[in-house]
Length: 438
Ligand code: URA
Image (cartoon, rainbow, N blue to C red; front, side, top):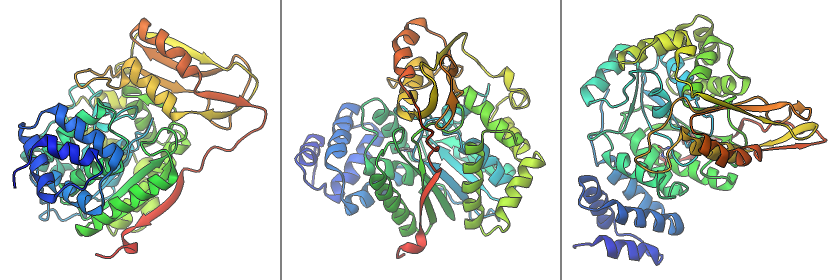
């Protein structure tokens, strides 16, 4: 049966189910370039509104996965385990976690994403290390993984090319917050990596793509089911994204904070989530005493050494990891100050993520180039006591007009009240493959 893109878009727009061959044709044609971005953007928006049922989601994910090659690392004699986040503000966890996991004996073939809507992306953060390339062909990807137990790359013309195109399109068309589009984007990338196990960090709260916990649970359940169906041991945790993780929001400043975690003096929330997700990764890989191994890899410097070694293999300059003051930093500085005495009751992740994006730490259009030196350092977060005039954040920016357009928005991220509220719990729920049939 022959399809046209317009018929499929109209069918989904009106609430219909997409036929399996229609999905396969659409993803295949989009990947090879015979369906234009504007039609795929319309389809993505129809899916945002109408969703995909379980069968459509399975076919959509498989078509994305099969748009490129599926890697096979069965010759590597280490457990192949990865982690992926659904996206958050200040969420740099992959940067300290992946080298720690590799230093503890796992092979981590990590295919990551760029900034998406108001959330940051691992690839953009890594590229603030001068020279670091995340564009690897398959043989280089394999070589770095084999030599170092860790590789950090993006989707490529041969590995999930469908997600490479669709991800950038969704970012620029307001079509990120869709359960099936997120689940298929993440799982197609992860299933292409030839994994034994996968840890999913599904964010919930204001700065997450899914703000409501029921939606986050639904997303986590669907992704764990897809992983299980493909024989990959998959665990998901639901974690809070009411306020940003750590103090740094941006790109280069998030590298600096990740190095601090690897040196043992990172913020408590980033360190704790890194260790908790690391434990899950090592458990899936059958490596015992997970927590103490990870802590030892911090104390001995093995995690930081691994990041330096891998940065060098990716063409990056490891000197910035020894001396983060060499990282790029935007020329202009401003501060946000408390307008009242009391306790911080909100430090809103979405507002801070949007302000950072508009200042140049993320993209508003596909063609935008990120400024790695733009960023925000949060000095007060939920539960902190402040006096009127205290500094809440320092902002590094490059364009005065953009700052003037964002400063009120950024200031509105904090609310201050008379009573102390506790910071949100980091990990809220856990879902794993053992709950599902394979
Ligand atoms: N991470 C991804 O890889 N894709 C999404 O859609 C969201 C987060």
